[in-house]
Amino acid sequence: MDKMEMAALDAYLNRVYKIIVLLIPAYCVCAAASITFMQASGWYPPIDGTLLALFDASTLVYLAVGIYFIRTGFGADGIVRPDKLRAAKITMAVIIVIQWNAISYLWPFTDFWAYFLLFTIVEAFFFDPKLVALTSTAIVVSLAISWFLGSDMLLPAQDELFAMNLMFRVVGLGLMLLSVNVITYLGGKFLVEELEKHANYDTLTHLLNRRSLDTHLQAAHALARAGQSDFCLLLLDIDDFKQVNDTYGHDCGDEVLKQIARVISTCVKKDDFVFRWGGEEILVLLKAGEDRAAEAAERIRREIKAARVLYRDETEVSVTVTIGLAPYREGASVQDMMDDADAKLYYGKRHGKDQIIRALPPKGPEGA
Image (cartoon, rainbow, N blue to C red; front, top):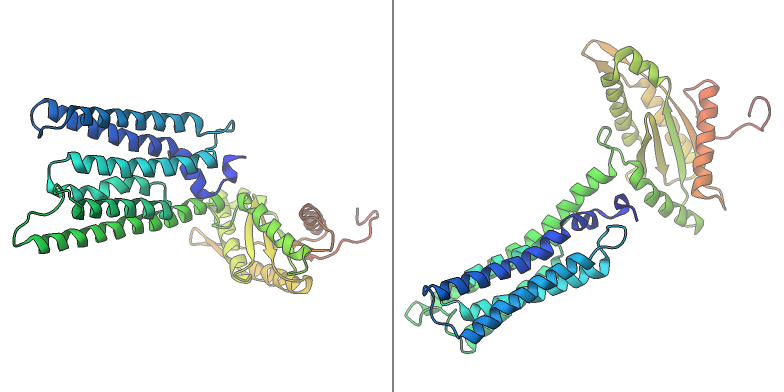
């Protein structure tokens, strides 16, 4: 599979997979190294040597697991394997919960609960709301267990402010839990939208590009083949566009393209799709029958002809378009429709321009 064919979030994960999978074990190793160093330096309350050795060894296991997922996570095509990505996510979540509990009982300070966010924020970079919700909930549950089932390390001091301090901690944890999950959801949502915008839209005209074309065409074709919806294709080409570029320059040509894109977008419905096919050609997918498509095509042709682009505040530039219209016919493939629209477009350009071609004449000297 080509990287350009991946969903936006998949493309993002393919780039950062190694970083995220290695970062969590690296955090664990750093935490273990810090506690061990402070213990050896006498800066830390005494810890059973066997317990500390097991803790240190476990972090090395986490690092080995991270390296394993990095080495085996990619297929021959260089794309992250979905099964490995799913397994890596779950494994990293389990490591986070285990590490939280291990450090909770080794850390001598009662305010360690405030580091809750650090243990879940790395998971947020997977932009998987369900995963982050489960991970953060598991940490909160284990923290609550440590508070109420015997550990006195993370409980507030037993004084007259105990209840208020405990309430403060509960509220703080709730807000952190809410924050990290909202960040995960909104971050993933807007990241995907931004990536999709750059991946699927032409930067000049802001129309859909050819990368997104196949998905929409196949969906419309499937509905039409099932008898659930009609659709037509309009293939437009700007008449004598090279002359515009040669006369006024490519900056003016770009302005003309943007103006035409705006005109076409206002002449179609919200459930229709407009694509920049390439150069000065634009493809419109209309979810309508042939007659309605012809009306829309005429409206587009007329509006473009009437539009004016003011070049350098002094010169008005106008253009016309020729349009080939290809309706869906029973048994026709998407490629058949594309070939039909293309043939009609170029017939129109050879025979007058500024027109809509709905049907080709019978083959012969004139129609060939």
